[in-house]
Length: 445
Image (cartoon, rainbow, N blue to C red; front, side, top):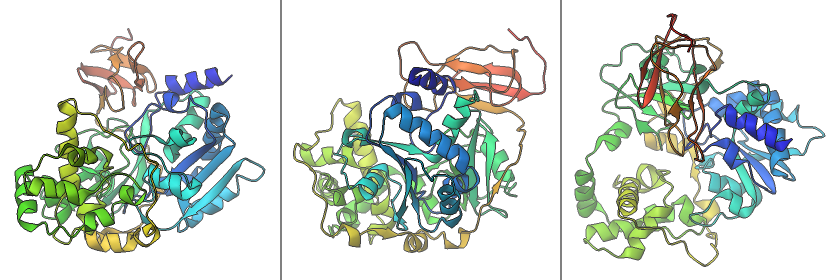
């Protein structure tokens, strides 16, 4: 029976909806003590998960019960913040007599880092370089569970829920077809002129700068934040790396605040950003110090909150990780079990203060869920929007497709995810992405 359900999930093309996009059929094909639902949504200005939990509690619970059954877990724990009152009420109404309970998180950043969530909920420390399954749990996203519920009823992933916020007239949380151009999605929030503006795909802390407003939203897009080009969050993301290095060499005072407030360091992981900064400052090449960068989660707490001189340990760590990986260097996890810092509770970053530090308080407005059946001018669906190998196209140009049709499949014996047409129309391009235009005829073969 479980094999049949896992096949449905695989066929539906479900991946982690809020993170790196790990294929769900692989992730849940394991034995676990608990299934932890990450409903923390700790990035400021994003409201997707809390609203989905409030409005679609039935599907969240159905999806969670399915994953509990597959993994053989004792039960499920939905971790969400106490301020999500509507979500708490909706979920409480659905979980009586079920092996599911809620865990109420404090309002801090990064409560949604899955390793932080696991420690908060289960008091278990995921070792550095490991995944939550190492300590007996599977962590899964809210929208992923909704997609699991849909898959059971033979519906594939064709849409994604996201928040459009920041400097827009009418912040909104809505559902759009995968592959919809960013500019069209932002227009749903009343912002049609993007001159002098920049867009972040994701939250203000970890989101990536959108280089092209025609760039498509993917299965993992959870927010589009519009900010003025001169906003500090944009300047930080566009700063050349050589300038970042020059800045740290002249301004790093080795105060250690980046390490003191590092969420992974506080969990006992061997990551000390100040030592990595010191190595670059003095052109040192201590392998053990530089390899610490592998254990950086890139949460941004160091550069956006901790550093008094607004330096960028996160970007330094990201560059070091990339270059070490390209040179075949592997991480070296500690053999000793991690020990949580005794001052961890006092070094959690309050979300309210974080918003002030980021300069986004004035953009902190409700973005209510609105079920708009949006019809984009076209969709450009990437063949690689998940962990694993890109999908293999199963369509050709001038072929008519219906919404939900399989257009790219997982390569044989590989990690990947199926991809489906997010609108009905005609395929006009097949390359590293598939472009579909609506309302045109073509050959259905």
